[in-house]
Image (cartoon, each protein chain N blue to C red):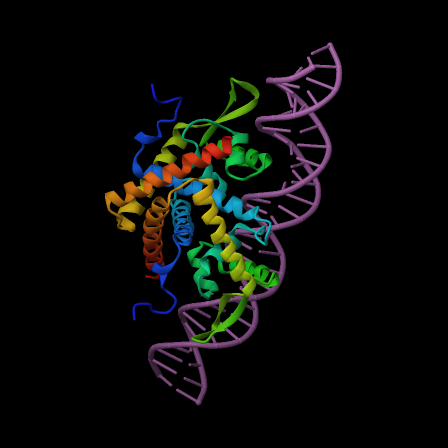
Length: 152
Length: 152
DNA sequence: GGATATAGTTCAGAAAATGAAATGTCCAGA
DNA sequence: TCTGGACATTTCATTTTCTGAACTATATCC
């Protein structure tokens, strides 16, 4: 008997395992980000924005990608700007739009988040380099596809 | 020149790619769940609870795993109970605690979410069976490890 | 049995998200 | 060039969600 009460996780459909895993990992990373002492104690959306900002992005784009209203994103941008994490710059291609850019402080914070991810994946969760690489590969492929769908 | 302005995603550290991917996929799935017409329009936590409830779980356990306060989880449980998705049952092992159990309706809803994940991963995102399986494998390993850490 | 810890609930106040109306900019066509 | 409509963002009042402290009920330890 190898199933100690409701734990036969291996027999599950792969889609369900992926679903459970992604929810778990996301929540776990987000929880740890919140507790990271730094300036990550704000609303959930702030942390999503921080991760998203690999380069300057429009408020509207972020709102769409993060499933938030433009008005919500305005508030989040205000807060992050007040804390010195981002700056607003007019989009040279469309002067109605703002680009949110990470400041030096914001960039540092983002790097610390990557460091946290590193620690969690390797040390805390005990994944091998190969496992992280394999996971990263599919993750990024999924991300790029989602990006493509959102833009299309 | 293969990098059309700030898109050299392949050179990124695997931890960052994993981070970005997980945030993207989580947000994408959650967004689609919200819009799934069903009874998924409530707060974010409800959807997390729905996915978490592979078997009856205590309110306190869910609160801890989902990084919420017990009082918040009480509210969420009230709402889900009012909508007929879950039932409270006294934990036979500790009569202070409640076990949240999916009702038939709740179970159906959860299955629909799995169906959504299936559609998204395969059809929308265009992943192969092998890719989904590989992703599911590491995802679940991560999930189990997180569970272990939370329980420890 | 009695003190203390734990599981969950209640409720008032704080924080965050929503939606509609407003501002300033772009763009297509007369 | 001028004009009307579309679009990006903001503002603000309202609603929804979360927080934290006080409380009830059960468990555990001595």
